[in-house]
Image (tube, rainbow, N blue to C red; front, side, top):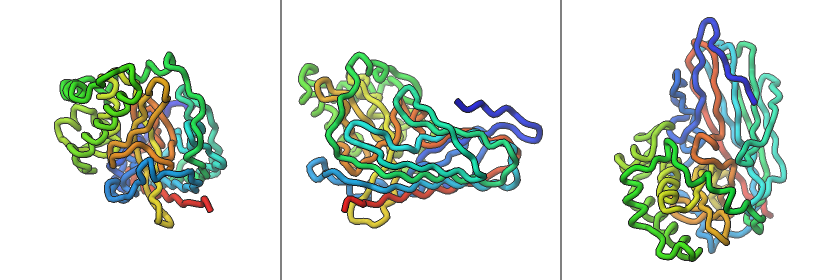
Length: 327
């Protein structure tokens, strides 16, 4: 595990935590928003995402570039990234490379959710940093056997930002499962919830931030992919359905270099396993959705996160490109 950066002479530790809302903004003490998503995506709802019926197995090449620029040298960066696509649940990563500037060689481990985590400490002065991942992924494969129901109970628990508040309970009552013993009834209730979130909430990158919780989204009636995924998780859990957060990408068919990072939810349906629900579009997930990491909420699955030590301020930029190489 990476060590935590301690405060250093000449500067304090500052957060590096990505979200959909802020690539290109200045990096700030305790509130940096490195957008690993919508700052480089076309607006999610303007993309064509195939319905599950349209989906077929595809092979995608993905390049995800993150660059940081500072107003002066900083003393240290400590960072971990979850940029290697997951294996399993109908997906297989056949190639992955991670390049970090300054000849940094990241180490790796598998976290408790099965995510590949790469981490590094850069402990010499630097005024910029780049992290570039390249991967090849096959999707739309036959699902593997997944964990048993006894292993998914952690995805029923609430913690901020996925809160059990009044608005969540009202939605859970509205879309309650007619027959909890019927997988089809559970799926129908979750489909209805997905459509409701997309219909009743406005996609707006200006109203929330990386720290927003579901009560903020309910009050604003707006948010981004991350917020809609959190709201889906909260309502599903209140309905008694285990649900987890997914960070990843969407490829838009017909475009040579589609650009999109994204977030959605997966719900555990007994006898069916994990099923993806994308409340932004709204659809069940398709072979054009690529899973990077999963967790209880965004903080478990953020594509990049860390801290830097120094008094300089900085900006960052993100570029994500996907290409269909199915042949």
